[in-house]
Length: 342
Ligand code: UDP
Image 1 (cartoon, helix red, strand yellow):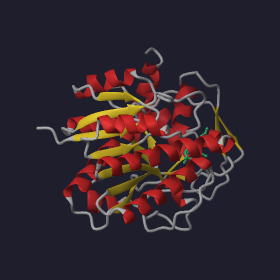
Image 2: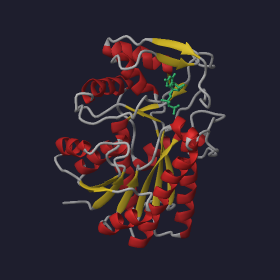
Image 3: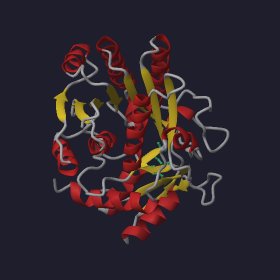
Image 4: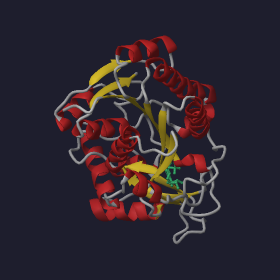
C-alpha cells in the first residue's frame, strides 16, 4: 500500500534522483518538480529502471509564483515536500549573487506558500554544512552557531533555514526538517544515476574523476600548508545513497508525530575527516588510475577542517552512514566512465 504522495523539487538532480529512488523503494508515491535547468529528463527513465516505478513529473520553474502555484495545486494531495531545487555552484554564486538569491529563495518561498495554501504538512530542506562557516571546534554538532557563509550560495542556505524556522514558529501545524549535508560524493551502484556536472566541476570528486578520464588535464590541490596530517584540508565525505536514505528517515520522523519541536536540523555526515590527499591516494588505489595533480595556493574561502558529529541523526532518525570511502570512489568512477556515452 502506498504511504502517500511526496513532492520532490529538483528530483532529477544529483541528490534528488537518489532520494526519489529510495522513497519509491519505501513505497512513497513520488512526484518530481524540476525545471531541468541543471539536470536531464532521461534521469526519469533511470529512476524507473532502478526502482520499477516512473514518478510523475512536472516541468516547472518554482521561482515563478504562478507556475509554482499551478504545479502545487495539481498535487495538493501530497503530504510532504522535499526541496532540492536550487542553484549550487559556489564560484558562480559569487559572480551572480542576484541570480542565486532570487532562484534559491524565491523557489523556497513559493514552495512554503503553496504548502500553507494547500495544507501540505511536512517539509524537508536540503541545507549544507556551509552554514557553520569556519568552526572553532570539531566535530560539528547541530548546536553550533550558524554563520554568514562565504558565498551567496552558502548564505542562501543559511537564510533559507531562518525563513523555515520563522515559518514553523508562526504555523505550528507545519513540520520542517533541515538536513545539513557535509560533502556528498558517490553514485548509485547500478551506474544509472550520478552527478552530472555542468561545465568544469567545482567540487573535488568530479574534478578527480574527470582528470582520471582525461577530460581535464590536471587537478590543482588547493594548498598543502594547513595544519592537518598531510597539510591538505579535511572534509567529511558522505555517500549520496546514504544521504538519500537519510531523507526517508527524516520523512518518517516528520510523519511519526514524535518531533519535540516542529522545526529541527540534522547533520548528515560520516563523522570521519578525510584529507584531499586521502581522496587522491584512495582513488589511485581503488581504480588503479593515476591522478595528475599539482599543489597550488589555497582557494579563497576554504576552511581547514570540517567534519560532523552524526550522533543526533543516529539517535533521533536511526540513520547512520554505512558506505565506505572506497565505495564512494568506486561508484563515482563507475559513473564517470559510463555517463558520457548516454
Ligand atoms: N579541492 C581541491 N581541488 C579542487 C577542488 C577542491 O584541492 O579542484 C579541495 C578543496 O580545497 C577542499 C576539498 O577539496 O578542501 C573539497 O572541496 P569541494 O569544493 O569539493 O567541497 P567544499 O568542502 O569546499 O564545499
